[in-house]
Length: 166
Image 1 (cartoon, rainbow, N blue to C red):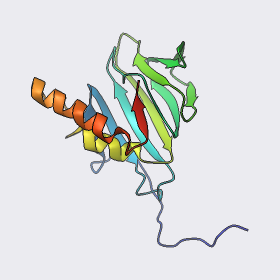
Image 2: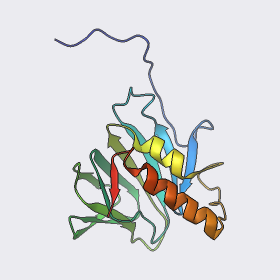
Image 3: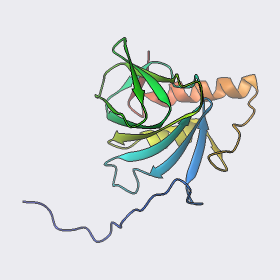
Image 4: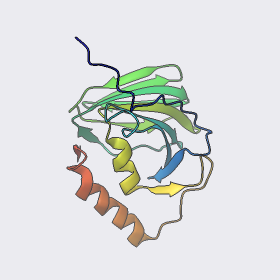
């Protein structure tokens, strides 16, 4: 038996070009929060990721699922030490707890959607990145001390957001 409808929850319609979209610069990438955990009652979040050539996170793992759909470019995923290249039109699921990372190997900017289930990664990125004006806004020019502060925050909050850097 499924529960009754919850009328306190509303329909969410997301567009990356919506002026109310929040954009975060994180290690050179630009992430747009299309659908947040707050909007889905914590079930999932959907992030539009713009990754410059050569960009991507360090190896890590976390206890939630990630689904990536490549929209533009080529992304090399390293999953449990094995490399896989995904091109535009490809979807890749990373199981919870599996060591992985990704890197843009396009020779040009790449773009992908990332759904995290359950949500939380959206909150983590907001706490460790820098909010910027839009998808084409430049990343802030950070001093070495500011870069170290971002890394320290990421490491300190990793446990809270169920992640481990490898």
